[in-house]
Image: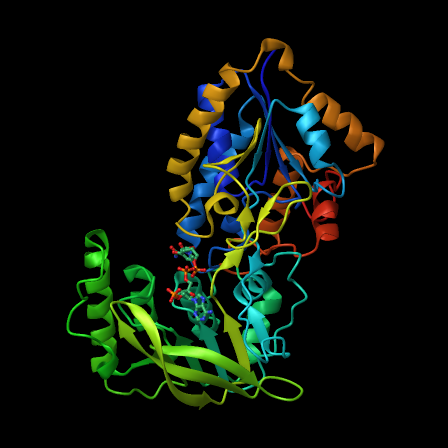
Length: 445
Ligand code: NAP
């Protein structure tokens, strides 16, 4: 009997685990379960809509999901359609690859005011994630601040700063594109609590800020150190030097006359958000750096902004039945092991860091471990797998979106896109299900 394996989550981590397992255990039956009817996790819902080439990895993921013995079970939520105990009873191995979908809270007074959004929600909104499609962020002011100095913060300011023409070949959802086009923002801020060397920007993404059609970039040259400093690990020196060069070039530009200005502020830690009905002011405290650490100075200043997006990292959503590491915001695990036969991979295992490809190496390591531990499992431990799960799902009337049904959604999204857009995403589960199960000849085809 072949090994029965379930992977929960069809983002990069889950699909690289599926790929590696498929190679090492060619006879295994692998079910990739996702609560959404659509696969690919952050590749669909996280990667910026104007970074289409990064999304090409989905071709590889399509091959993984099309492999004989691998199935996609979309629109199946653990906790709603199945329980964790049922998964464990049905499969020899369960891998949880559920990512980190929850925003880390800012944790400062006023952070719940209307007009303050976490980047998971904000990015999910413009990328058409069903959970965030109705966010309708307040974009009616003139100034917006993004807190955080990572690549997500860069994505958010870049997407907001781009014109409709610059986004024409992106897959930004029409509702978000229209809301941004209608906004009258003139000043964007990207704010780091530490310095330019400590920012976790990658150079390509930082450099893109310099090419925005309607937005000047403003950096105070006084905030740029002469060199990266001795606290920077050797392997990071090159990228930090390159980032400094890019920032110096930005700082040397004469102030242009573009309609928007992007202010890059360093050494400013958020202290409070002020406002009555909604955000009016962001209060910041200047910091100084000691060997790369931020030290508070007590000196405060205020930015008049009407919208705040915090891009300060993510936490994993607790998974029913699995112990949770509150301090780290991940599933409690020991090098990927949650309990015998159950593993965690990707961001829910080690926190939100790394790019899509990082998951491939991680997955290969975890799969080696899974296979060696499976080898020690007695033959009689083999379970009923997907057959049992299918029975339970049928009994409960679950509407399962398999890979072919997802392809129907995919085709419908591509065919309804206007102009140069690669697709117009459905943003509601109901619309996705209608597209998935539309009869041939329906007008969406
Ligand atoms: P990140 O790189 O960890 O950046 C988080 C930022 O938030 C850091 O600058 C951090 O500052 C700051 N921060 C944390 N808590 C804060 C607080 N309380 N107040 C103020 N600032 C705070 O995370 P991310 O941007 O969410 O990205 C997650 C991962 O996805 C990263 O590995 C990233 O490279 C990857 N990603 C890649 C791309 C791409 O390749 N194009 C695009 C998007 C995301 P400190 O450093 O001081 O803690």
